[in-house]
Length: 290
Image 1 (cartoon, helix red, strand yellow):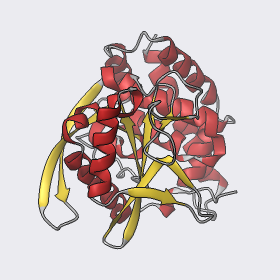
Image 2 (cartoon, rainbow, N blue to C red):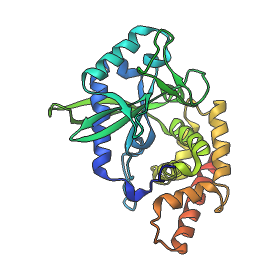
Image 3 (cartoon, one colour):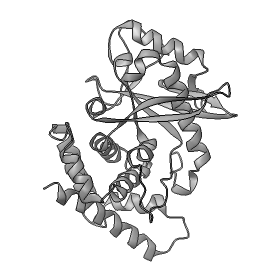
Image 4 (cartoon, rainbow, N blue to C red):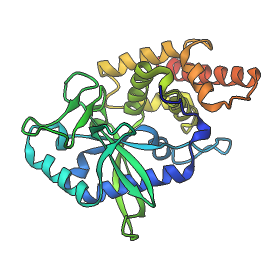
């Protein structure tokens, strides 16, 4: 079993490489970059632009999750071929793990001697967890991981300009579409429900965004109520799961939150404080939703 990562395992340098990787991919995606949406651990730094003075920075991420619309979810071969050809041309390749295995939804690129992983997600109605490809294509080419809730980002996103260095050393910029609050919370809650202790950062990301949302969790709830996807059945399902996972301090939601932030030598008092914090933040959010 892979070692569970904690906040101390993350660093700003790696997160910066991930931001460069998404820029490099967007710059080569051509017209299909408008059907690519950012999900995962990079989202909080784009959703929350004005940090509260008391807030520590978000820990960042070690990979990039991108939701792909027509380029993968369509059965048409042209957009698929375009995206595949373009990302390979700039240096992306299938990621190979320590055992020599590859997955068609997991690609990587080398930046400054470091390998950055990019995972492609989609929602086409296939079995969750399966790999989706256009019917015309077989073999280890570009695929996407079937993820419940991925389509929500196409209906509720924010656009952010990003900039940075490309692989050739030149600086450039692009506009990325970022999953907004409700799609992000939905995706993270469903991931937390499915992955549990394997990825405690899911609970951390949820609490971090709600706690540091401008105006706090109650204000986040008001923003959620205005979302065009708030009434979707899957959103309601995820909010029910969120409330249950953070129902009291002994639940796995606050447990994962504290586990992610604590070092092994932290004391019981700090763990109790973090558990209480997580429950208070989520409960305030849920209560304000009515």
